[in-house]
Length: 400
Ligand code: FEO
Image 1: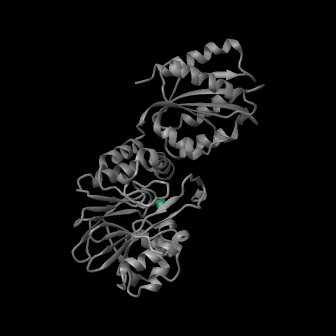
Image 2: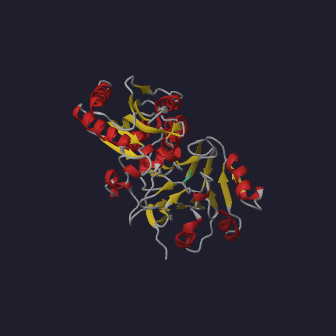
């Protein structure tokens, strides 16, 4: 049964939510599913903006059929060719004779990689600034390479002031009976998922996200339509400000993420005591993660959010406890920057994890590692409490 939502006079949401998915891209855990947003413009010509993941094909096709009301589909604009938005391209081409795919040259090349039997006749290739009339509406295209993938573009409907932003401004989390961000308590319902989505999916590409934000800044926007999560029709500045911060690695707020690894609880013990000292020294936001128990994608998101990070890890096989090393490599690959960092190590006979963690962190941009480091030999001793207290004071001295 169709479930179509009207967005304005002739634009409709025809997407669907997947609540069964547990791992997005088979990597990132989802607590509350994800929506795949697709849109249809019913102008003199009919235009779909991106499709959906194959997991929700059936709902999408019912929505599309219902929205078209016996009309044919003339155009499919592909802003992003990742399979979670292209699950029905071949189906649409076989169902709607004469359907043309509107995309850029990079996306056209990628269609050959993902699909079979693509024909040049099926495509209308666009480039930066091109205009495309669908009747009363005029679309224009802005390339947004690496705002996740190289073929990404955003489409702006000059007539209705609607922008289709591909992965930008997307969030994890299924939609629940409404599609507009202002119909939710966005901070409570979606902000954590939006941060997890941005930091893990687009986070590596802050510079490219900045370029896109600058490019679209002069546009008048009345409706902002991402490929995942709620659609924005007001209060754009709120979410754009989050994107400005995330894409420039500017902390949203002051606070400390303590990421610790602990085989037998002794490193955790030091991390817990440090957390108390940090609180006493003025940090009101402290988030602790056992890296063996929490998925990296949640830790990454909180590190994007806050200003300070403590990494505490045992030495293992002459290296860093593996779960911590994986986290650090992940942060490095995501280009995490501008954090103030403290390091704690544990080692019963040859502690080396501070040195090795420092080696990774020092290759990252604008990371400040405080001088005070703590070495635990098996378990924390009474006389080391002072060292923890000094570490907390030293971190607190860097508060802005
Ligand atoms: Fe939702 Fe980069 O795809």
